[in-house]
Picture 1 (cartoon, rainbow, N blue to C red):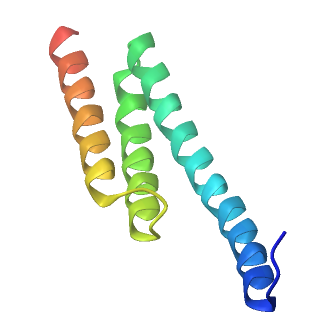
Picture 2 (cartoon, helix red, strand yellow):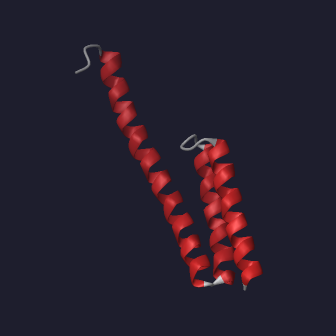
Length: 90
């Protein structure tokens, strides 16, 4: 257990930030999952709309420091490649 008042406050802040980060990570993962399901089902038009939402979520998470900007860029790149491959296949 923390001994100083500043350490106790730091614990409170960390708990708040952890919940906040979990919320953003969860929303991001959900957006990516919806996109991947649409691509797997062959719904290209729907996938294009969901890609925009997923990219937006990734950008917001990176901007707020929830995920590293390079990780967001990598994930966006992979999503774009997946959509392009599905578009060419259909």
